[in-house]
Amino acid sequence: MRLVILDNYDLASEWAAKYICNRIIQFKPGQDRYFTLGLPTGSTPLGCYKKLIEYHKNGDISFKYVKTFNMDEYVGLPRNHPESYHSYMWNNFFKHIDIDPNNAHILDGNAADLQAECDAFEKKIKEAGGIDLFVGGIGPDGHIAFNEPGSSLVSRTRLKTLAMDTILANAKYFDGDLSKVPTMALTVGVGTVMDAREVRINVL
Amino acid sequence: MRNGKGAAWAPVLQFTNCRILRGRRLLREDLWVRGGRILDPERLFFEERLVADEQRDCGGCILAPGFIDVQINGGFGVDFSQATADVGSGVALVARKILSHGVTSFCPTLVTSPPEVYHKVLPQIPVKSGGPHGAGILGVHLEGPFISREKRGAHPEAHLRSFEANAFHDVLATYGPLDNVRIVTLAPELDRSHEVIQALTARGICVSLGHSVADLQAAEEAVQSGATFITHLFNAMLPFHHRDPGIVGLLTSDRLPPGRHIFYGMISDGTHTNPAALRIAHRAHPQGLVLVTDAVPALGLGNGRHTLGQQEVEVNGLTAYVAGTKTLSGSIAPMDVCVRHFLQATGCSVEAALEAASLHPAQLLGLEKRKGTLDFGADADFVVLDDSLHVQATYISGELVWQAEEAKQ
Image (cartoon, rainbow over all chains, first blue to last red; front, side, top):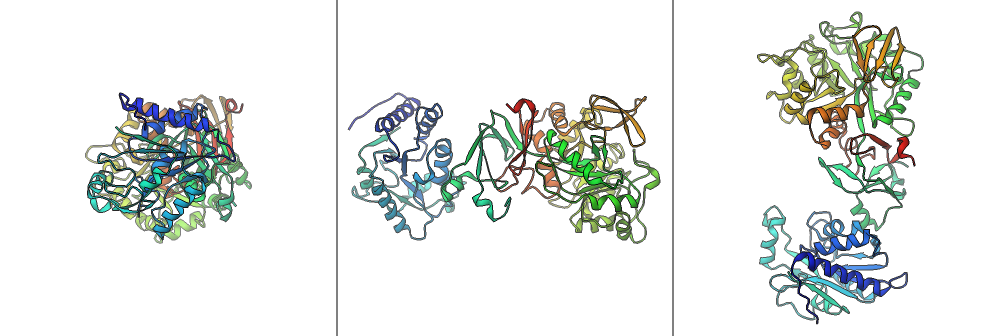
């Protein structure tokens, strides 16, 4: 494990983006060789996505041969709801880069069979050859994705009921109305993250 | 295939490097188009897993909904009110020429005419989609003949009419079938106007108040009967008076039916409306302001002396005079000039100026889901403008229909 401490958010974002960029370039992805990236949402990685978009616009990096897997998504929230992680990824990253939509994987929180959706997600990760680099953030209580404290360290992608703290904290994104806040989410497990060849965690 | 089942297989066009007018704001956002309609790219990405087939760099330009002119009497030497055997080709010429002004749809306007003119002309101006051949025709605007003698302006007195005992039948007898009609301007103080307003609005025809000496109460009653528009505010109506503000008072009336929104046309050519009057109207009721050209056949003819019908007209820049006099002979400012003048005269936002020529006329005609907006699902009728709002290109249904010479490289 390597710990890098940086003075402020911008420096940390830039460092993270450069790191991801370098990893992809060193990997030399191509038609038969995709780089597989695990991605987070939330406010922490926004600066990192901005930097990656900047590098892409400058022509420094292409995501044409990159596959992405997002960590989590709310259950029952319409895909086009501004707070859905689909919307987040589209607006903050995907629409600005050249990724093939077939390679951008996000859990479907509106699937008829949620467990089947989770199993299929694990299968897709496996078919992609596992995750080369999992980028994550860690919440104040140490949770990664929606794995609240106490989650099994060998857990896989599954349906989770959100902790009351999380629901309360989220209310501000849903007009302050608790009844509108999703109470469940699909999330990769701690085991899913730990299977990745490399994990990078940003803490602010 | 344009809007039909084939749309899902039509190529996806992505206009990049632009600012688009959406939700009252200019956004740094790409515009996606497929099958003539504006596409939701997020849905395309996540549901259809598709990307654009073609990208077009807009060079940082503004993309705004195409302009809609609901009052234009002619242009380029063509007078829509002339009952020739080939009205269609005259309308087609104007439709094609105004693409360069950013106009993507319009309402050809007929001034007060004898019944035989309506009977001859109206069937020759059907509602028609726009395209490379010209701006779309949304339906005809009939200005008169049921207007005030006192406020007739340039309308020929001999052909003015009032409503007879069987009012709506008289309207039908005058105009003939109303299939091609979208707007009727009338004076609400005429007897039996209310049953006419009700009958017209029941047929989905927009009723506009104008060329009238109506006081505010008569105007409010007309709105209660269904009228939604005011024809060229301030022109050809009683001047504003504080004890009876007349039709102008509708802008701030509190006696309109709940939820009813009144729109008003403004000729913002720098000549026909004093900038201070423009500002008064805009500040009182910004969301109702609809820019109209009210253009006459001299529009687009260029400087010099022209013979139009029986009249000699002298054009000098943006003004047309009856030749040899200082009498104004109607407006000849193209729509894009009106937008720029409106922006400069009122100090409003660029967004507000563009919406006054696009969203507001579309709302007036109840077309705001399809026209006057760049929301997903709307017709991809839009205009590409530089920062000073000069038209660089015009698109209808996602197809390039006009382009400025300097933008052609």
